[in-house]
Image 1 (cartoon, rainbow, N blue to C red):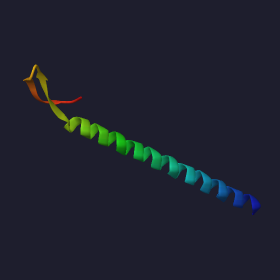
Image 2 (image 1 turned 45 degrees about the horizontal axis):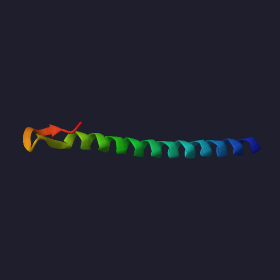
Image 3 (image 1 turned 180 degrees about the vertical axis):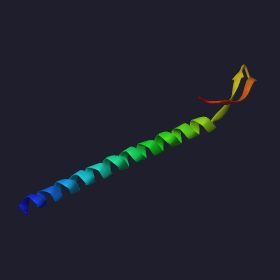
Image 4 (image 1 turned 90 degrees about the horizontal axis):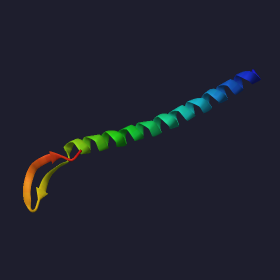
Length: 60
């Protein structure tokens, strides 16, 4: 019986660690996906000596 209690405690600790890791990784993926999306949407004109040579060019 005593061994069963430790097994449950270890399992709960492992599960908690997994959830923390998953949450942090999920947040990182959200930030990366947001950055990628913004980089795809960002556009700019390229000007040389006040003359626009390219319009609406992707930033990345």
